[in-house]
Each structure stands twice: as C-alpha cells, then as structure tokens.
Length: 248
Image: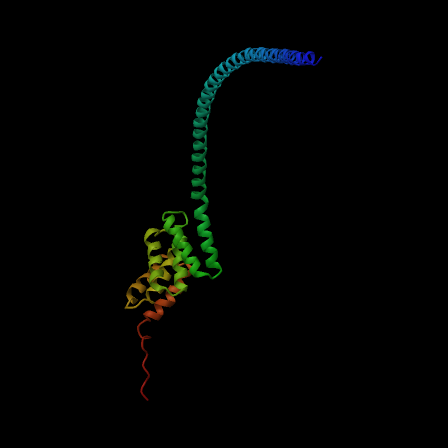
C-alpha cells in the first residue's frame, strides 16, 4: 500500500509538469497572436502613412507651384506699383512746382506791399525805429519796387526824427538821385537841406543850393514857403544882416 502511494507521487509530478507546459505553450501562442496582430496593424499604419506622405508631397509640390505663381504676380504688381509711384512722384513734383510758382507770384505781389505797409503803420504810430528797420528791409529786398520812392523818403523821415542825421541824409540823397521826377522831390530836397545843416562841418552853401532849388523848381509847392524861411535865416537880405546900434 505504501509502495503504491510512492509510485503515485512521480506520476502526479509528471502530470503537473505536462499541465504547466501546455499552459506555457498556450500563453506563448497568445503572445505570438498578439505580436502578429500588432505587426499587421503596424504594416497597415505604415501603408496609410505612406499614402499620406505621398499626398503631402503632392500638396507641397502644388503649394510650391502656387508660390511661384504668387511670386510672379507679386513681381508684376511691384512693377506696376513702381510705375505708379514714379507717375505719382512726377505729378506731386509738378504740383509742388506749380504751388511754388504761385507762392512766388503771391510773394512778389503781396509781400512788398505788406513790408511797406507794416513799416508805414509803425511810422504813423511814432514807432520810428521799427519804421526805419521796415523801410530798410523793403529796400533791401525790392530796391526797384513800386514803393521804393516813398520807402526812401519815409526812411529819411524816420531817421530824421531819431536825429540820425547822416543816415537820414543818405536816404534823402538816394531818393533824389534815383527818382528825380517823383512828386516827393520838393519835400526830399527841403529835408535834405535841413539835414545837411545838422551835420558837422560847414554845409551851409550846399544846404542853400537845395533850398533855392525848391523855390526855383517848385515855387507853388507847400515846401517853397518853408524853404524861403530857411533861406532868409541863413542869408538875410543886404542891410538887414548884423544890424548895428546907432551911437548915442
């Protein structure tokens, strides 16, 4: 009985070993099936990826062609814009030249009058320094301007009031030299003579010459009477000069 039991032990061990081996085989078979399924899935995915890569390559080629077309169109557009820009620049430059010409015409017409009027208004308001500066500016910019004659005269007047005798004499002299037929000649000769009498040195004879020219050339002018008064004071008639007292 005991012997029989001993024989059963190896048989049981052998049977359990066979069972374990079959289970391992089944497990390995299952793993192989899973591996095959995974490989099949990977192959399928790889095929799909290859298709997508081909599609992407075609799309990239199409995109590249589109970019070339766009680049060509951009080049044409750039050329058109350059042409338009050049045309616009020409138009703007032409407009600028026209505006400048108009401004020059306006300045030529209005600026001289404005400079003169500003100076003359300063003169009327007894602001003789500003008046003198304004008339000088006018004459520097427009020496042959339509208002040059009165500008010279009132420049002399402004300087005369400020007792700048030498400068006033120069202004009157310029007017008399450049505009000998002006209606302001009688006044300019009179004031020039009066200015000469203010200068240092003996200017009496020259002053008398201009005073007498007022009487001779413009006897009916308002300045003639003033000139005569100055002449009488500077050269009284014979018999009235330096009267002497009679001895007692």
